[in-house]
Structure formats: C-alpha cells, structure tokens
Amino acid sequence: MTDRQNGVAFVAPLMVLALGHMISNMVRTMPAIAADVMAPDLGVTAEGLASLTGAYHFAFAAGQIPLGVALDRFGVRPVSLALLLTTALGGLIAAMVGGSGGFLLAQVVLGLGCSGMLLCPITLAAKTLTPARFGLWSGLIQGTGNVGMLLSASPMAWLVDHSGWRAGFWSSAVLAVIVAALVLAVVPGPPPRAMPPGPRPSLAAEAKQVVRLGLSRPLRGMMVIAFVSFAAIIGLRGLWGGPWLMEVKGLPRIEAGNILLLFTLLLILGPALGGLLDRLLPGRRRPMLALGHLIAALSLLAVVAGGPGGWLSTGLGLPMLPASYDAAVFVLFGLALVPHPLIFAMTRAVVPPEQVGKALSAVNLSFFLGAAVLQAATGPVATLGGIGAALAFLAVAVLVATALFVRFTRGQRTS
Image (tube, rainbow, N blue to C red; front, side):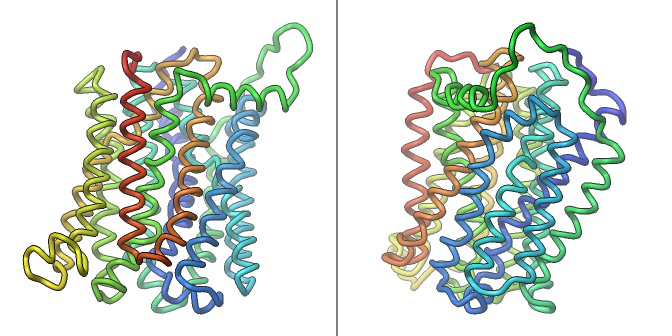
C-alpha cells in the first residue's frame, strides 16, 4: 500500500470529505438542544420525538451494506456527491414539511444521505495509508466531523431561539450543497481498476460478503463494542443531555447549550488524542477501548446518581447536585471515549487490504444500527422511568458490550 500522507493532494480531499461527517453530526444532534420546541410543533411528546429521530439511525444503518459495495465499485468521489445531495434534500424536507409524518420522512432521507459521511474519508484513508498511520488519521477525521456537534450546541441554541428549529435544517441543506461543490473541486475521481478474469460478482453477492465479514470471528469484538459506543455518545449528546439539563436540572437553553458545548469540544479533540495515544502506546488498543468504555458507562450512572432521588444526591442530603457536577461528569465521559476511533483501527488490523472497505462498512453498520436500536429503546424507557432511567439503560448496555468485547478479542492482533 502506498503511503501518500504528505502534501495538500492527500490532506485536502480527506478534510473536505470529513466536512460531510460534520454535517451528519450536526443533523443528528440538533434535537438535543431543540427538543422542547420541536416536539410541540410536530405534535408529539419528547419520547415520541426520540422514536422519530431513531428513524434517522435505522435509515443510516440500512445504507451501510449497499454503501460498502458502492464504494468498492464506484469510488469515493461519486458516492460522496450522491450522499451530499441526498442530505440536502432531507434538510429541505425537514425545514418545509409539517407534522410528524413529514419529519419522519426527513429523518429517513437524512439518514440515508448521511450514511456514508464518515465511511467515505475513512475508506480513502484506509486505502491510501499504511496501517501504522491509519489510527492517527482516522482520529483526525472523526475529530473534524465532530465539529458538527459543536455547531449544534450553543450556536444552534441561539439559532433556535431567534429563528426557530427549522432554520437548523435549512442551514444543513445549504452546507451540504457547499461541501458537494468542494468535493467536485478537490476530491479526485477513482483510478481505473483492473477487473479479475471471470464474471463480476453480483451486487447481492458483494452485499453478502459485508454481512459475512461482520459476523466473522475476527470482527466480532469490534462489532459488539461499536454497537454501543456511538449509541452512548449520541444518546447523551444527541438526545437526552439537553432535556436532562433543561427539564431535570432547570437550566435555560443557552446555559444547557454551553455545557453541551464544553462536552462537544472534548468529542472534537478526543478522536485526535486517541489517534495520538495509539502512536505513543502501540499494541494497547484493546485495553484502552475496554477501560474507556467502562469509565463511560460509570459516568452515565454518575449523572443519574446526582439527579433528583439519586443515591449520591440523597446521600449528601441534597434534592439534586448542581449542574456544575453534570458538566464535570460530561467531561469525564468525553475523556473516557478518547480511544473510540481505535475501533476502526482494530478493524483495519485484522482484515487483508482487499477486504478493508467491506470490513469498515460492516463495523460502521454496527455503530449506527446500535444507535438506532438503543436510541429507539430509550423512548419507552424514559416514558416508564424518566430521563435518568434512559441514561441508566444506556450505561448497562455499554457495560455488557464491554465485557463481551474483552472476551471476543482475547489474544487477537490489534495493530
């Protein structure tokens, strides 16, 4: 594999493609800061909004298998352009169509459009870089993409207060068109591929290869930890963090947005730090991922413990701990998931080069299928037990998956 990491010709396409991932993160985390005005406008409860936004993740997950095949067949540039234009369409639907049915349609279109926003730059990096450098660059790509969560914190709170929640989706559509123009300008077209002799595999056959890879023993550990990893991040930052701070802790929208902004800064810097740790501590991907997810799960439980009736606030004789406590625990949660991008690096390490695209697609499927399933499940959990119960549910899921990850990856090559 040729290592072409030096120069603008390599960096510019990766960073432009990562801007698509930024839009994806902005779109999926918008409800956290606007749920209180979105739900009444759409005629649903907060729990119903959770179910509607879960459609985004189901559509996102559904796109992963055909996406892996498309990237192998057509290359990154045409696939990314199709995804960006689909995302622009989804933003327009969300901004213009009323009611829960229209919003559900918008979430499905947005989920399909955003389904490859991370995989496009990750695939380009995996096919261009040596395995030793891939961990660092995958972290930089995810860190750049996580700027979208920054945009959906305090800036989005200001926009919602001044122009309404639909303005956020208008902005996502405009950004998608701008990034599509940049892709046309700087991302090279796919080089011609020499086809092996014999008939070309059918699309169905190639899709089955993605599924088989995902179920194979080498990928089992990464699939299970991926299922909960992003679900925990998006559950706190994308949905329940804002309502917890505003409805449970009583903060106004801007102050809640400021806490989410601090948390988001860690999610931006964290992946790059994770990639750097991978370079400084070679061969430690497995323990870093296991310990990080364990601490993340305990952090979610600590948030609940400091809420009304929580064991910590009750033990201290307080109705609940102040919002500064939540801010500190959110920071701990963000630090714990610094190694999060190493899931992709571990995946890259256990498959041959010709299977990298399909393997990354399989793991990405698990990331977002997990987010879809667990986010949808938190709606009824919150209905029965409140927002704290939804956060505790996510924590238990992460604890179980971490234990399975440790078991499935025992003795496995990680770099």
